[in-house]
Length: 343
Length: 163
Image 1: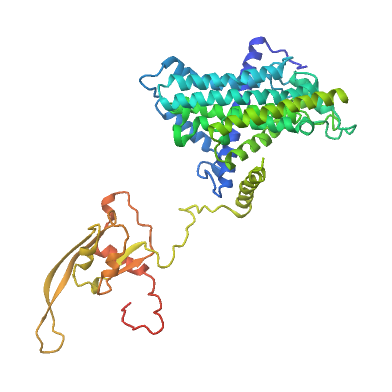
Image 2: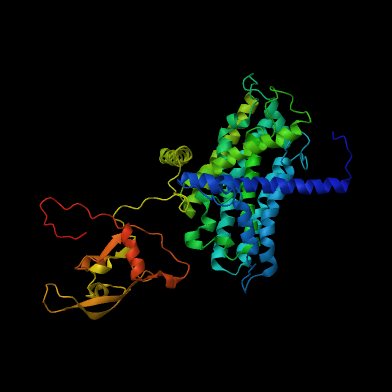
């Protein structure tokens, strides 16, 4: 659809730059907007105020601080694995964004099984965390890594099962077509706002968001990095740039999962097609902004929950996943299937 | 499930606090730019009224941190009445308080029998060099300007205090 021909290497460079922007800008926005400001406001504080107007340049100060620090590795560490682990975690985020559509043509790779790909790729970060925990030669890291593995595997199931409802309803695993189905759909014949699956799949959305919270090890589910007992879990031995990578990974993953949730449940980049034509070239510019807005909304909820609740105990956390979320997700799938056939 | 209302209430508390912070401002005071006035009888710094001091050393002896340094010498003063014998008095040479050691207990102020020591609410006297926290008697005398008026005595109390 583009008028100018770009050679393959040019396209590749543009894609790499695009993914970099898609990872770093939302991560930075999340850190400033939610971690610095929303958290402070919820505690009746002001947050950073000195670096730039309202502390808006604080992020650069933080990055500068981390880069200055020495890159330390423990004596007994498995050096190659230890150094690779943060990159594996960050790589996951890049891979998730590959399949998330930002506009009618603005998608890095339009997979037919996009949903499946995103969910499969998102669990690679468990490997990075296990690598970090195992290679650090530190008891705290090891226990943190194992807890993370146990938790992420437990919550991977409801995460996947919650999405199945959406896939059944849309009848496709292609994320572009899921977006299109929501944009052009109608609620009992009324197409004023399309048919975002947040209404029909609200149980799915709830389970998905809870599972995402656990996948991100955000606070009610932060046993793996419980600082009062495990120092910082699998991140204990990391410093400087590698710690920064884990930090970016945490917030970029939050943004990536929110973007996926926004695509699956809130209509993604598209606005309801009854408003205006959603396939025009202009949507390639508006679309990313729409998706960004929806992403911020969902990640705002994630961080709101994070700043509100205290930590779950390990057994409560596992029981919650296996005894409540998974049966609920299975029931949701059955209901969706029944209703899909009925209507 | 029975705890669900509590969870929702918790979310409301954080959201309400955020809304209050945005609309009415945070509890934070941005210190160097805006200042909170300390309470009028706050224990900020100890001031010395030099002419009241008799070098009795009670404050230095009662100080738990040994942060008060006093030196004095005897000298002759003119007699009280004409034709009388010249009096002997103790003159103050040195009165230092080391605020690097002081723990602001206020025992010296309590114990002073001649009303030479007073609390002042002034608190901004930090120094880049720790040695500069040793305030000599001139510096301690300057703090006298910031000492608030003594509070009203209770009804029926004997009026004895000098300040």
